[in-house]
Length: 48
Image 1 (cartoon, rainbow, N blue to C red):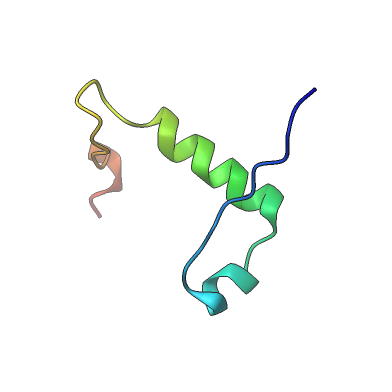
Image 2 (cartoon, rainbow, N blue to C red; image 1 turned 135 degrees about the horizontal axis):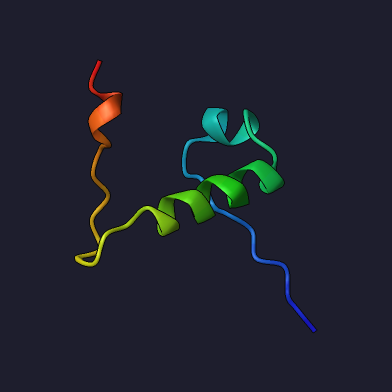
């Protein structure tokens, strides 16, 4: 049995802009883009 895990956003306006499904998707993408040191770095092709 899995439990529901919501994503908490402290900014109420920002929270109103996304559904929980979208927030969970963004969170999983963020977590998967961490490097071995636990840091997220910008990709080379995002510089400009």
